[in-house]
Length: 492
Ligand SMILES: Nc1ncnc2c1ncn2[C@@H]1O[C@H](COP(=O)(O)OP(=O)(O)OP(=O)(O)O)[C@@H](O)[C@H]1O
Ligand SMILES: [Mg+2]
Image (cartoon, rainbow, N blue to C red; front, side, top):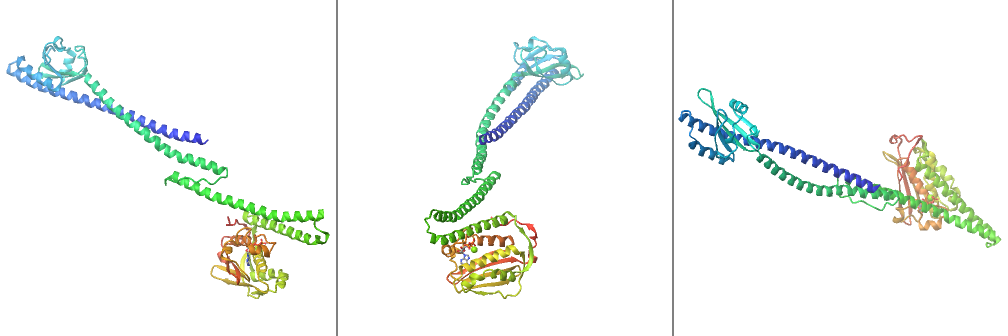
């Protein structure tokens, strides 16, 4: 298909251009020949007529001076001079067409014949012109003009004929045609070569793009095209590059997601399988069974948590989850959520602050925001130090309501901060501290907050505290009608 494209575009473009040039050259040549031959003829007639008129006036003065007769010896040198000057012949006839003398001398065609009456009739009217043989008198075709000699009584007393070989025209035209064809061939050759390379240069990038697109189609996005020009072809190449860039991003995200998920699924499954086999084949002593069954139970819970989280995420990301916005007091939602953590809070002797805050009304999907607060509180309870505190605070500016969840404890390093929102990211410390987490909580939180048109940031001072602040736009700001509509996330 690629080769076909090259062939057709290249051949089409090339043939059209060459055909067009050939047609133009032919047309130009025809026009040139036509005008040149016309000009040549006009020029010939003009010179002949000029000469004949001069001869006629000289002859007529001789005729007048000789009172009806002319002296050929006086006239002949003049006729010969005229003939030599214009490379033609002049001859004088009486009024019956019989030649009196010719500039060529006595052995010429004209002297032995009499010009036919019908030619003389036309010649008597004024000036006569033809390309021909003077009705068969001459052997070759000639340009011929005739000028009548008219006396005082308005009677024609004779004619002066000027004549020259018409082959000259053919020779002239052939010469011209030769020159024209030669230069045309030169131009055509040059055009051919230039056009070949220009077309090739035009088609080559297209061919590269086709090859690249084919490669992309196979899922290999490594190839990038050279963008050499800023024309449409260059733009196309650049767009293809951008497309490959973003597709490769999507592709690598997908691959790492699949790899992460499989890894997260594999680890608990291996340990579950191992422990159960151990119990079944008796490698694990009866007394230890309970302990290992507990681990198996934890792992199973973790697996189902993972699957649930991923289902939720995919619902939100594909826009399947409905966002039912309504106004509610977020302080109350926080209090309810914190209650469900009563047990671990008591176990860790935590000080919970900010539960007695005034009402803060936000407009959002309550279930989704519950998930946000649940995940943030879950993290805070997991990563707070024993005897530490967890503090909820609320602020607001003209556009957003901000909710902050802060806990004392080890906090996060700069490097960790940049990664906590990534899917499946857990700090090394948390891997030891909390075996149940899969590293999806904060990713879900950010997805939900973004879905509402807000954002989330994390701040931490290592060894002191860690806090997450998310924003929700004020109701009046929320004019895009999130309520009861499927909304696609802006994430990825
Ligand atoms: N309040 C916090 N204090 C210290 N580190 C935190 C805090 N919240 C999150 N982290 C770090 O960020 C990581 C990612 O948190 P996230 O909630 O996404 O995953 P998780 O809690 O490990 O697992 P999951 O929430 O999916 O059960 C945590 O593993 C932890 O290392
Ligand atoms: Mg979490």
